[in-house]
Length: 183
Image: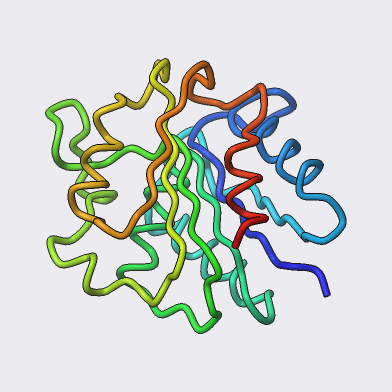
């Protein structure tokens, strides 16, 4: 039986070779036939709204059976984490993988109430045995310090400090593939 993977993309245009499209294609190809990677286009990605994305995540999760692996890139990662801390997910989550995810509400330039996690969000997360967060030092959009913000609040998280992946991980993410296959 194939393992279910739900990939939530970044904000912005998601056409061919734009946004998270190359990363989503890479994940499907690298994970192979053992995995069913779903990567829906989120509502209005060029002007995203949390409530619309929340509704889409809920809809996508309702179509899956059994265990699920969740992957979020950039805004998709922070939205997934917020969703999981505020909503009920009935599916067992094998792993949560956040790639270049911004941490909203701490740094001056990253203030957006609709994406900011609640103070007690950690206690509200469902049981997730494997949480990984990846950040490249040369990310030109999300500051590398956001990885540290997550690590401070989520001590159980495994962080991967990377080089030469930029923000979009256009050259692949073999670290992510290794971690997914390792759970």
